[in-house]
Length: 236
Length: 171
Image (cartoon, rainbow over all chains, first blue to last red; front, side, top):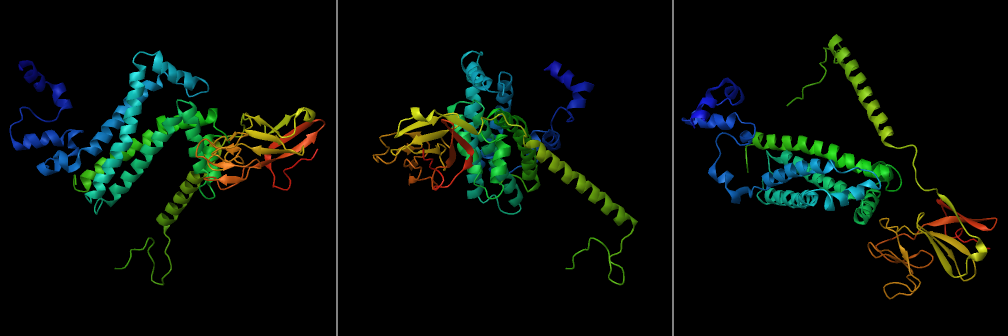
């Protein structure tokens, strides 16, 4: 305790944490929230009702937590994975059977992905049935829809990466659905596949989409989404 | 409420262009052209020019060794080459016209229908031996490819789809 007290008085501590210790007044308490990057997702004062579990079921935060988990496990999986034929399938099997704790990590990634689709969907249901999409939150609802679409696209692009029979035919069917888009359908399919059939280019394209482009948009939009929650008047 | 105009008007109602508006317009236009150009160039970049895909034209034969009323399936090209009872040849794409799965040929038919010799494992479309739809979800008949005789071998071009009248090669 004594060491902590001393630590809190040092210049380094005070340069990192702006709030002066000890915390005694209500102003001090509010400053802790106000000065923290993570805690200030909530306003300084929140109605007790608004942070009750039964109010939001914490579905948005659970989705976000799963996304963070997916990034961490995903980055670790990338270390043993090459997006090339035939390495991709062998790497996936190595992760399952050879790499220490690889199957645990892969399963964590897979189950988190499935769960995230479910929680994002439930989150939207909750928002819909509570009428939380109404003004002034209409734009945040639109951002939410885009986030749902990106979640589904991440799920879909990740599905090809093991490069087994299941992924191959799922992507065949999926890109053929894309082909039915009027006028641009054929071109979009060609660009997605990097050719007329699923091949080396397709795997790399889906890999880049899955690991770089889509997560980047996801992070940016999540930031905007959270910021808008505050600007539109807090939880609802 | 009157809308605020982007460019102010002078007394005779014509748009007044001063130096600032002129330079801003030129700057914005130039930026716009550069952005549009880089978008176009990027889009072009995304479309590969050389593809290492299997050749569109392939050969089957010699013709004499193919019995009437038999089929040859080419898995690489996903094509059925068929010789019917009269000894005529035709080539059918094995790619389901619904969502692109590879169909399977089964002489005894599928789903209790002896005519449904071609069936798709993905969503259950059925086709007869001419590639016509017996049961959906596919709505279009299987593609027919140009088939020609070259010396004693059949040459099939999967890049050239032909109509029902042209599909048959009489030998």
